[in-house]
Length: 284
Image (cartoon, rainbow, N blue to C red):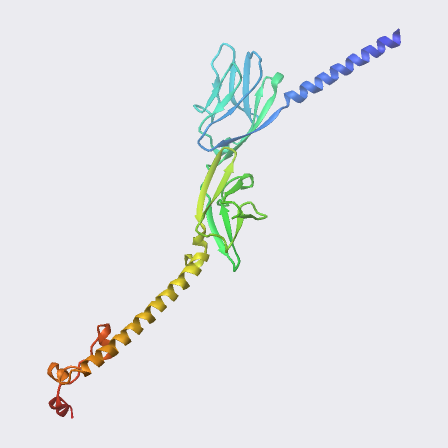
């Protein structure tokens, strides 16, 4: 009987210890929160507890303190920048600055919850640039290195099916030069609370703006122009010979007009020569 009681007592103690450990693990809950400079952030406390007093701290420095029946007292540099919901314990900070980044904790000790706030700069639009080789084009999407938390940036691409090939770096894509370079691709950069997009027409990545279609069309135009010129030239020469034969059948006409036609006359050209022996004499 004594042994049974001892065993029951030990089991009870063990249960209490487990409960304490469980409650302790809950009370030490830590959350990571992101906020943007000049925006606001809210630390939500999801506890159905009636508070008689509340204290929020930032790295052990007081942010706001409240006791039931009194007004909340705000500490610098948070004056006019915080709001405390005394019912839920939720805290909101407005007009965030980079110096607000820190760990925030709510008390009483019965619900010891902490939040680590990361304050990020507004996300700028990405810049797209490209380089090309004989076979492919590499397009890079970049955010300035001065931006904080570049390691948290996520990159994605909007391309037509089969156009873009993924690189080992998610901020880059590869495009075959034999592809349709008249198409546009988009780079989407995102981080926690915001997203920015930039686009690029692939033809601008090729020197002179030539795509594979240009290299086919331009020689074709040159060939057509050359053939047209040769046919036109042939027609001119044939017309010139016909004009000469007609004028030979009308003797004396050239002397009256004082000029001589050449084969180029059929194309709108004429060569003016001296009209008689007197001019020849003067030239000698």
